[in-house]
Length: 230
Image 1: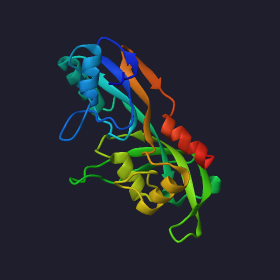
Image 2 (image 1 turned 90 degrees about the horizontal axis):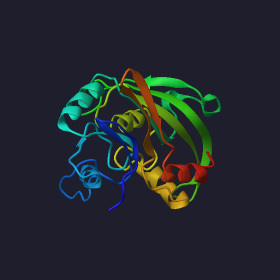
Image 3 (image 1 turned 135 degrees about the vertical axis):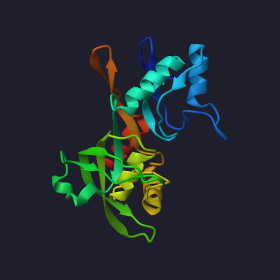
């Protein structure tokens, strides 16, 4: 069983760099969930206090005991923990033109989920370019790809993936909310098959200060960016 990278630790929490393909908690058909792996790694029961999708990699807060878990669940629910993601997408939000896209910012505010709860995601466009794909008919087709920075204002299930899909710029290789044909093209032509979403930064209230933790993009995303020359 792989050793999980621990990015930060104090008396209450671990911050772990979760690999893609690892579920945070167990369930039917789930093998080697993160909570089980980390419990074995540190030698005592741990308590996840928020979630990342199985196919999303990046920074995850895990409590060392039930008291700390209660504290950190409340901190996260109260917006005291800032979560920042990077996503590689098809297209651009709000019909922004690619030649003027880099540096543009905005927000997504559409409700998400079956219960249509309010949701808030802020975005910044980091990179954008036009690329040429060959479609299923063998014809050349132009497509925009973009790298976005996203900050969660709320923490609804699949919020980022849903918001980006709703705005016409779905995440590359998102098999649930993305575009099947474009995902198929990019997998066949460039070998990009893993969800292009990672939690790359956390701002945590530690003591009397805000501690910022940052990680590099995971290998599958840097490989995708290189393949796209983005």
